[in-house]
Structures are given as structure tokens and as C-alpha cells.
Image 1 (cartoon, one colour):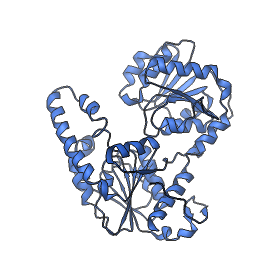
Image 2 (cartoon, helix red, strand yellow):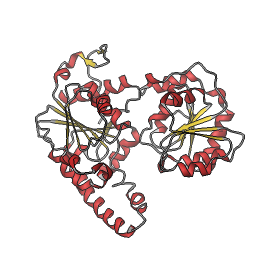
Image 3 (cartoon, one colour):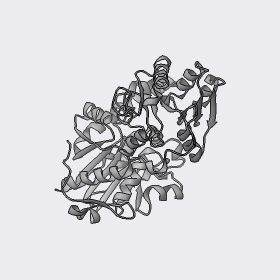
Image 4 (cartoon, one colour):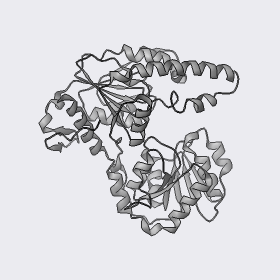
Length: 401
């Protein structure tokens, strides 16, 4: 369901906290924000951060909190934070992801019935919180749990090693039981919000519920076009995990010694990346933010091969005025404008294969004059923080009418 823009003037105070003057009740609204868990600061935590900034009077609930005091202050500020009983288990940080069924019970133990509105930030569990008939529950969904639905066979198939058959059998039973719980909680939500049209389609396929699309907030203010001249290298930056396909990117450029590639990041796939890297590939490892931004600003193009629900880093690259080579499926098909469109900001490739990626690289090489840094940045600004706060506030206000 798509909500109309409510009447009233939208303004921003000096703290960038959004106010909708016609809906002054938002300023004093008692909000409960439920977030799956806080293992580290990532894209989901960026959404939570802006939710709390939009509703600074909110109370935050989460299953696990492993953040440092500095990270916690960065995400939730001074908002009260409640964690589940599971957070007290010894060494739980090492195995919390295996407690999926226990988490379904723990999320239901949070008593949020005293709040006017419940706002959940969910990639698996938060939408299952129990609310009363008089409450509105708005669920911001990063994705239905991929490992339980469309990617369940891929997830289970990766379970090998010692006792692999037993692990897979246990995982199938766990996913089956989780799916039953997940479907039972679908109708506890009044309004679904998806972080992209791609996820809205996944929500419809999984739960048969329509969802409004509100793209997640990207801090475009931390990036700019820069003053240094562009150089003849391509750049990619990512965690080295399988779905990011960094080894594929590195192997593709290693086959093209006439092109240069610089790679920033680290993780489990790093050994594969090193093995695939040719002399024309430079590996920075984990680079500080300033180094990563500097490379984004100087690169000829940014390369991104993951099939993402949204994909924040390609938007950050465009905020630096840099065109992006990205998969033409998933969230990047919504954030990167292909050469076939007006005002292009990058090139799509069709398949996660080396030939498909190299074909896209060649298209960019042949059409470098088609990309304007200001156009790239302007496209990125459409996914900024202010837009997210405004649209989320309007969505909540629409529920109160």
C-alpha cells in the first residue's frame, strides 16, 4: 500500500530532526523501536540510527547487543535500550545466530504494549513482536529472512565438514519451524515498508502483503566529488564474503592486464582474492574511511558485483561523482542508472559471471564521456538521510490519521 503525502509543511531544525507541523503529535509520540540485534554497526544499524534521530523519545528493544559504548552511543544515542534474556548467555556472541528458534520466543517476550506506535527494523525477527489491537505496528523490512525462504537450499547446502549430514538435517527442521512462526506473525503488522522495490516483490512473494518502498538512508554528506583528477583505475570496496563476489571481480580484471583495479576490504575470502590477483590488481586490505573515499573520488569507475537488497556503497561512490558498474538485478538496478537510460550513472551487467562483467567494463570504457560527475552525485542525493526521515515520518503520520 502506498500512502499519500500528508498535508503540511516539512521543515528541519538545526539538529536535522524532522518536524511535520500539521502532525505535531509526532513530537511527543510514544514510540517503541524493535531491532533484530546489534552485533556490529552496519547498514541495518544506520537505519536504526535515523529512526532514533527521528523519534528521540523512543525506547529501543533488541535481542543482542555486542556494541562498544562508543558504537552504542553512535547508533541509539541516549535512548533507553532493552535487551533479551538471551544476551546474558555465556559467550553468546560466538553462537547467537544458531539460536533462531529461541529468538522467536525472546522477541515475543518484549512488552511493547505501552507504546502508541511500534516501529520494527527487521531482517528476520523484529516484526514478530506482540502488539495490542489499539497499537499501530509499522515494520521496516530489510528482507524476509533469506536463509529461511528463497535461499534456504543454498544456505543448507553450504553446511559441510564434520557431521555435515546431521547439521543439514537439523537446519532443515529449524528452518521449517521458523517459517511456520514467520507466517504466523505476518498479520500482526499493520503496514510493511520495504527498503527497495526488489524487497517489496520479495515481501509479496513470501507473505502476500503489499509494502511501501522507503529507501534506507545513505550519509551522502560524508562524500563529495573531490578536487583531485581522475586516474585510470577501477575501484571496489567490500567485506570479503562469498555473496559479494570479490574473487570474481579480481579474476576478471586479472584477465585484462590493460586495466587497473584497486581493492579495499578484508574477510574470509581474502585468500581467494590474493590467489586470483594479477600484477594489475592492488590489494589495500582493510582501508580507513578517508583512504576509501579518496580512491572513490579518483577512480574511473566503481565495480560492484553483489546481488543486494539495496546496496549502500554504490550510492556512496555516485556521491563522489563516480560511475558504477553493477548487477542489473536487485537493489543496484534501482540506484544505478544504466547507459540505456537518460542521465546514466553507470553500466549494468546481466549475470554474475566474468564474461558478463568484462562486457560491462568494455561498455564503460567505450562511453566514458556519457558519465557526468554532477549527474552521478545528484542521483545519489536522492537516497540521502533527509529523504528517509521525511518519508518515514509521513508513513507513521498516515497511520495515525
